[in-house]
Length: 142
Image (tube, rainbow, N blue to C red; front, top):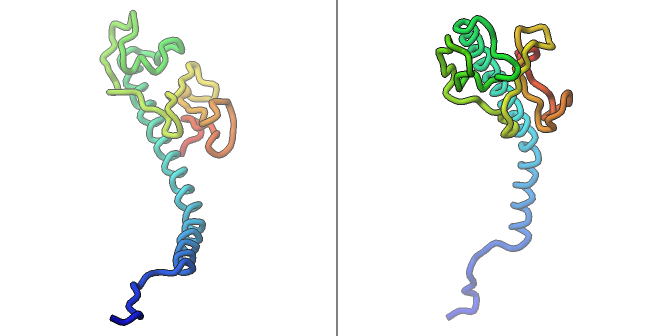
């Protein structure tokens, strides 16, 4: 047997170079992926708000008015007391904000020039904000 029979393998330097290349690629691609993820969440919020607005319009057609502030969006799922013409449920379940597990908010009467307001306050659960804390409602979705 020869003493030159060595097993082949990677040196530490080669492994470090590969890890660095993968890290650099991740650093370049990561922000783009996260930006697209945020866009997808905003698109989902807009779709949820449109669905809620549509269900509210069906509610109004049956009951001749929108749910009261006290009844809230729950009136789309469960028949409120005293609503004899209620023909729901108007939605199978109420959607939740994809940026968190909070329900969409509802204001009647509107404070933004609409019939009613359907909105989400974002991660901070405070009025106003930028980025992931931005409020999205039926008055500012596209």
